[in-house]
Length: 468
Image (cartoon, rainbow, N blue to C red; front, side):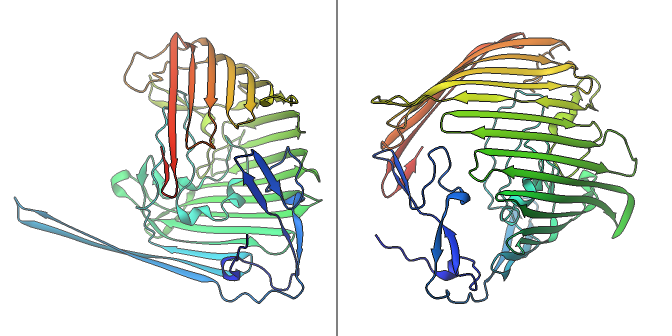
């Protein structure tokens, strides 16, 4: 088999004659993954430390100017026949991209239109906190990891969906620009600035959002990063001196040469005009992985005044339904995880093994607020199907009465609730034309019982696609 990859479709430095590269072949029929450069079985085939070297006999051709312009025009018209009135609207905007260097890009958007963006998947939320939805707007996606990797999943100093959206309502973006990419082999930077318009009907004033991040590579596979996030209120084209929120932070990401050890430590500090205390967050993460053993440790802390207006820290906000108000509360999180895998010989089972996971939340005085213990056992079969059994032992402290259904039911009283649930999940062989997955989870839940189940079937009809 031969493949031709046009040079124009990739970004590269023509002065570099040695590239890191790897090729992978996924033979699903034989359940086999082959790579050009050897990658240990317990790592993803895309792991950079295990890539091979491509050495050019002659320097590749110099890359030409790489840019794109994406204008749009949107029109709509409507007619009211009863009142004999017509309504017509015209909207236009532009997205532009310029490759400043082979690894540094400049993006510009003017009056962007996000009507073509994929809608969010509907999720039933039975927790007390907001759910994280991924960014899907094209302008914010490229090189988004440079900004979004700061912090942890539940402590994010920057969350791009806070720009141009307010409580599910779209807020018009006037313009924005972003410069992101690599300066050299050791430095990576990202700078973004966005300006949104006011919306008097929602009592929203104009806002300017800025974020700057820099990442420095150290050791063989580690890096240290710095981030600054700023939100500034604007009224009638004038900056409101006391209407701002800022985050400054530093993250250290560690990885051993063979990626068996991976870790992270960060510290972030919030600033506003009130100069409140308990306005910081910190966390640590350490993971060790071999082919058979997985061990992980995580701790998190966020002070109640770690206010990140352009971030995502849902557990700080506790809603008191009876008073219709938000109470902010500091929290600690302790999260260890361990799993072991056995690889039997001459068996239809590829791998099986137990898992033990703890997710423990406490307030600033280390008093329990939530605890979840998961005992699981996983079977992975040679035909790529899987079956998983688990038991969940949960304890939840409700600080205030709450209707967890959100449907106007009688609120649960403030108390400590224990739950005991059992789960089974199965995923069939995806190499078959017809495949699927199913799950069943049941047991006690707060002061009652819960049963959740799901079934998904997919059929692959080549070359038309996959029907689900």
